[in-house]
Image (cartoon, rainbow, N blue to C red; front, side):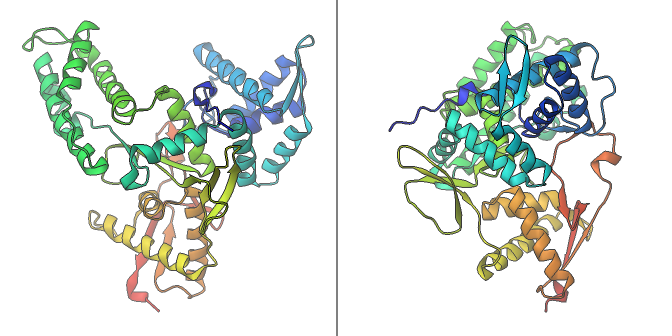
Length: 427
């Protein structure tokens, strides 16, 4: 049977915890108004934002102005999707809602701490409804067959390419930046995609768009409005994101739906997406799963069976296999020393280490955290060939940052964000 893929029909929110917040709100209430009030409260308590990042502080102004409208929009999106999945029954005349047996079961999974099972159950609902992961995983592999579905979306800022904001004043300055950016993008395409492309035409189109939209003057010597600087840079970034997705990779749906599905896939563990890969400025995406018509696959766990005979497998190597344990520790060592070259400190960033290991082993963040904890316990027992130290430096909540943009690493019930490895303690 042919699969009808519908990734463009996704609702507009990223974080899967919104489903729990909604289900919990309906467990406590049945009237629309009361459900929404509880939803707002729980959303704030769980520090959920409208973007793909979590907030770091409870927003006391959440009930005022535009923010309440954004919360209402998100609420309606989550509610609509939950109804589609059969988690909630709707009584339109009374404007009331209640949990179905499936909704109650899903709520229980979360409250028992079975987060992977909660996400997996949602994954099954999503894939039965949209077949979006079937589409996007196959798309990744097709777009870059030689590198296992790796997609790169460079995001070089002017300062990152040596252009100081204070010296960018004219239309000609922006064009100079765009020429440098073009060369850098062409280099990235050659390095990561094994393709050569001349982006001169796209650069010309971008400049024309900036002039026609009133952001840049037509003369290269004329100064632009400095208040429009941020708008210009944002427009440039969005243009190249769209060009990479549509023209270079050939994605036929919107960037918005692509972005939402990749970050939902990251939470489930079938796709990895990051904007913080060490040594690369921009976003990288790659599958941590495969779609095949084979009925079994070594080191892979079956997640979904399709009516056309395909199966979706998530890469899930077992810690019990000694080869996997050795590969993880070796990957951890390689990542640590690669990062330590650019650092004067014995301790380095654990999240950066995780990025390198996940890419090397093509595993999810969830599996990395699980393997690291197991390795750390072996380390404490003196059963590891190296000595690992994990500590907490200043946590995001202790900084002035607004959003938690990188998922933390929890080991032995504590958040850790720096790591040190001593190879002199090899046993």
